Amino acid sequence: MDMETDQTYQIDVGNLLAFNPNHRFSSAPSSREELVKECVTEGTKLVQAIADTLFNLPSTETNDGPLVQLPPPSTKLPREKHLPRPKPPTKWEEFALKKGIQKRKKDKIVYDETTDKFKRRHGYDRVNDDNDIPIIEAKASDEPGEDPFAKRLDDKKKRVGKQEKNRLENLKSAAKAGALPSHVQLAVTGLPISGTKAQPKKIGKEALGDVAGLAATSTASGGKFDKKLPGEKPPKKQGKHHKYLPVVPRYGWVDEEKEQTNKVLGKLLSKHSHEILNVGKAINMYNDKKEKKKSGRSDKLKAKKDITKKKPYANKAN
Amino acid sequence: MMEIRTPKTHKAKRVLEKRAPKLVENGKRTLILHGTKTSATLSSVLMELYRLKKGGAIKYSRRNENIRPFESGGETSLEFFSQKTDCSIFAYGSHTKKRPDNLVLGRMYDHHVYDLIEVGIENFKSLLSFSYDKKIAPHEGSKPFICFTGEGFENVPELKQLKEVLTDLFRGEVVDNLNLTGLDRAYICSAVSPTKVFLTHCAIKLKKSGTIVPRIELVEVGPSMDLVIRRNRLPNEGLRKEAMKSSKDKPKKKVKNVDQDDVLGKRGRIFIPEQEVGKTPLPDKSKGVKRERREGKLKKKNKEEGSASKKHKKSE
Image (tube, rainbow over all chains, first blue to last red; front, side, top):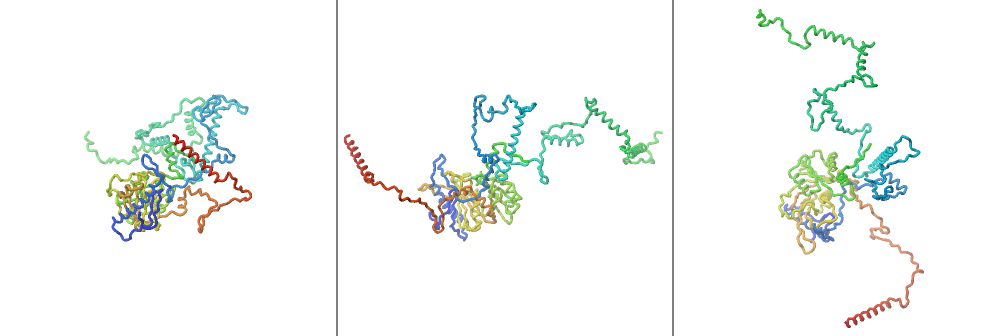
């Protein structure tokens, strides 16, 4: 194809990209259509140049059409994420390196000597299953009264806990190096350090139900006629909450009802009962009550009866 | 107190692994959103950009008031969306009196803003206004040709950056194998002036020519617009170097005994082992071993065999 200058186009086949650095658009504005036409013709030339290289690459025939192996792109573009960082070796890996321990591939099926069969290493009906041991022989170091089966379970729990702790430590050091595996997240739980913001505690279902019940009892009818949301369970204890002490005391227990009344009496009849009783206040209350009774009038303001006014038909009875 | 949280389903695990940083990355996804106000042209531009990049783009329809890409605090929302949707290119459209029909194209590195370029859109022609034969309409998700014309793309730094951003935007997935029948679209970008770029989208018609290479004809199908450069922000050097790092740069094995010289070019050194003249084996010049004798013998043998076979034929 005829080119405007001696220099060729910059073609990047991997990206299907072509660049013509030498074309000069006329600074004098020709009409829009002409400009568009010019751009499209220049574009056609560039696409033709890429197609020239593309169709000459070795191709394989498939059902959909000729398949061509594209070379890697030559224009460098920035990555979207950082390069994956190398994981620091775990504690076991460091130890293995130091001691020269090689990894050995384990078989899925292992020969079991007790039953003379081939059993799987993990899973149902496995070799050396810890739960299947019928008899554990007593050793001289065993204490009497200690359950060896329970001890085994306990040991296993401890081992699993230790392993989990080690795993957490390994993940923490990986997170520090910025190389945490993509599917793992380390989340902070539990008490925060003073001065830092505490994580809002999530309330469970039961706790929420209890709180709702408490709020309901503060209504005038004790939450009896409250509209319940769909799925909300009925309140556990309806009506007034009374604690009735048992009339007949339980064997060996103190008589609670007796104790209750004795307590009150004791306070009243004690030597220092006057200190408990506010005598002044009691006198005032008594006097007030007396006065109210006398006057026959309540404290509330009432329209005073005018005794000078006569009743209209008062003397008709005569 | 720390807790290890792992996904409970395989699907969740696969999603997390897809989004993890890798040596060879997935294609960049585009996030298309708009600000407080958009004009008719701008909303159609965003819609058509989404249509062109279907399968590798996410379009948000609500307006976002607190996104200001060029201000220091206004990028937090963008970075959050980028993290949520795993998109590393975004196209943010807004329309103000000062900057009408404004489109900000930006890229992210590690979900933080890497670079930005702001363009104004003029003379926009929607893809609905182009009439063409529907048979040549490009298919969704096909790999496009990208063409740049004009010296501006090399000389003007803003246009250089725009060229890089447009390549990143239109490129799609990087593939090893390409089906030649699936090539049906091309983006043409021409630098008509140091501040203006004319962008158009064409469908490709392959016509028969005498050779394996078909003759290409372009038909304008898609949206066409003029991009006027407004503001831009380049990445700082350290960040750029880190982002351009690729895994293939590392294994640079030192080739021994070769060095580059500006005057003489590539020079190599050859080491010859010591010649022990006293111990070199002398040629065997005894009579029967000479080459001419051996060859002569062979020729004779072939002649005899040849005549023997002729006799055999004659007898038959």
